[in-house]
Length: 391
Ligand SMILES: *Cc1c(COP(=O)(O)O)cnc(C)c1O
Image (cartoon, rainbow, N blue to C red; front, side, top):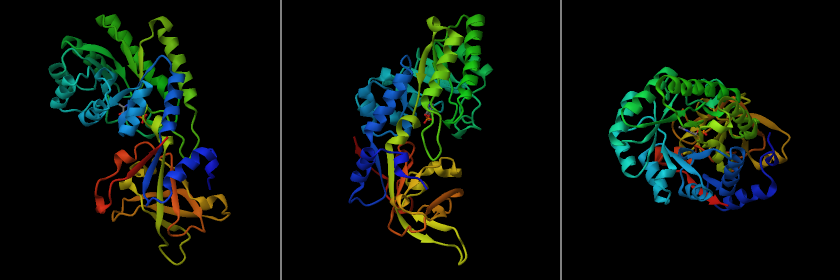
């Protein structure tokens, strides 16, 4: 069983418990000061990089305002996220449109709003950008390895192979766009440091080929997101990723010819800021001699815990009785809706105190990313997840 001091010092934990007092569960408490310190850490580790916060991790106005003030740029996935960030008075030149899947009319809209930096990975999308966002900077997303070591892989749906990427960048020039750079995403919650190096090697080849054969000098490498957050198991500190990546970049480009570097962190900035507070609705067993308890909480996949699909993301699950209990037992953790997919953990060995009772609070730690933005609106009539911000 976990102890809360493995995750929080007493003062930080108190912020969450204070915000939780007297409020009906479920709700998410987000401590903005933790996002701030993660952002500052990232800037400190990559002082020469531009950070484009991947808004989809936690697109709240409170988070956008904080990061905007700290000097962050933003990567949006849709015109709706774009509107949100523009409404926070962020200048369009600080925004990239990172989704490679977009309607022509949305490209046009983004262009009219001033966005001049677009991701692409296909000819059809590139042509839309040339038509509706003429003269813009484009970067091509390549497919990279990494899905085996990422807990939430993103790679297969996006990106194209390096030969196609090279062709798209040539075509971009021919269509009057600026062939600006190359991007990749090694998969979210990426455990391996080495996959960045592999991806960067492919990028380097594209840079060289375009320069040598076409006279195209690319200007930017977008390293995507993927930096891990601390969930149930320990992960390498971001510092190790930063050092490995920087070393590789210096070795292959030299300090004088270093391209512009963009990072798009989402999870690593937002995850640790959130604690999802829930309550036990029911505890039952499936037969008289069953040793496993089924613990149903008032949050599930549809109230923000969608990343437990396939038991991919393993949130630390905490209940105060863990501090004193010496008697833990195996549980299945499930949500409250009438959908049999609404089971968070059945295969993973989660243990909760035998003293656990209906009505006890269950805290889902490190739930600041990919939770509230995923919460359903009205499935089974449950309202969307309430979020409380503290700092
Ligand atoms: C989701 C996403 C990110 C953020 O990834 P994390 O693993 O949460 O850091 C960055 N870039 C793009 C293009 C994305 O789609």
